[in-house]
Image (tube, rainbow, N blue to C red; front, side):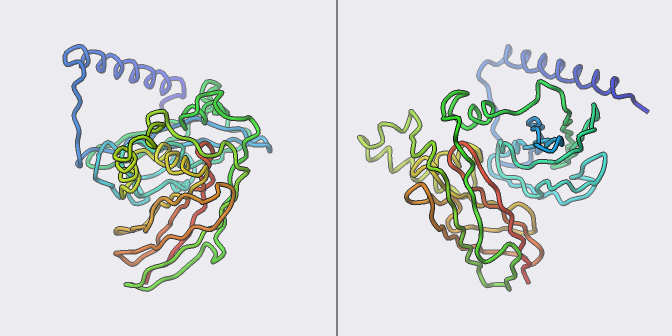
Length: 303
């Protein structure tokens, strides 16, 4: 059986080889980029780890769907599993396009030590693995979150609190086809950092055509990058909700998918959900203040 050290050496060698190949390709064709709408794999990503007050740790994972249109579905099982321990660690089974950051967390005990937590994902004929470990260099702090949400390491007040979200109707629901489901979420926040525009959107008020084009981009059915798209929607009022189809068969549509919370401090937002197939579905809503997000899951039995 391979030792832990041997696996780590293989990983280092792999990343070194991958970096060398990237340099070779870039050296041959500078600026060349292939874009695929479908047929490509979904690569799991280990984002880093967090400390919990009780001494345990959260390993945080995301993914890169290399397709620009296809949203693969990979059911739980040999093609979508964790080791060691339970194969189901709360990972998604539907994978939105492009880079999705900080998608879910896996709690590990305080005595986890130097073991790896491995997420294996097979899609479109390719198997990829993400190796989670408690290496000090992979610890996630507020600066990492801010930088990835487009604020820079020092771009937001340190007293910013996470938004809260709840569903008065509960989180275990039932609907019969072809009926739709109306979901009302109550969201509140401390108002920090408040409404903000990206630098390339600052002149929208002086250019109506540019502003209209930006609004059209925000209504795209699927997020290009969950962390960035949510932040753009939240930037209008400082607070927003984005819905995604996290697990389940068929296609689920939200009308709308991303909803700014008027006033930026608290309020109710409503979306209408349509399903194409019966089964058990998990829908996830993210309350987003443009830096911090708070998820809530809704289990829906579609009959």
